[in-house]
Length: 282
Image 1 (tube, rainbow, N blue to C red):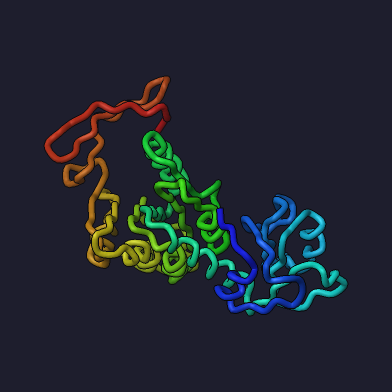
Image 2 (cartoon, rainbow, N blue to C red):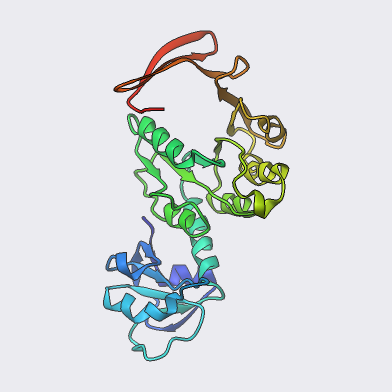
């Protein structure tokens, strides 16, 4: 996880130290005093139903090394290190982007209308056979969760698997501007968020922002059974591979059968076929 002096963070965030000393070191970050580990930086985020500034003293009582705020805090000892920034959320995201850029490893972004978390967990389990994997914890997949995931990267990680969710256009694009994925997987394009986006085309555009962010030399994996995949395939600079059940899929599953211990199927890739078994139902 991230380890940094306040002096370095001030340079990255363009914040102002309003109390305490610049040579303090923090290790890790937290946005919730209930699970804060001593030595972490506490970011006082604000939302519709919460305000982290109300818990700054509690953060210090729990061992926070520094509090990052966007407004003045009263009745706090001047001995506590406090950094004021324009936006605590943007400062968290900026720090996560800076930290992610220090790691020359594959970062795999996963999005879709359904199946994101399952895909993330199965892929991570497969990769863990040979690699040290860092992945999204639970469903930390939004503008707060993605930065927190990236800030947990360490030098021993070989790959990072990041789940990405959205509620509207532009949101996945912003997450990709923090995570810089080198590979993307889009599970499907469904009607979730239709009421916000107004059309299936807009949903495809929003999910397709992941594909659009993948650079040349990267890889995008699309659902070959989803009619919107052909729309997404033309907006990426990366190489496209399709998966699915149909004959046109480059990675194809067929002869699928559920058993009492899991699922068995035949997996076709290029000119080869392989018998597979997953200890999962469905």
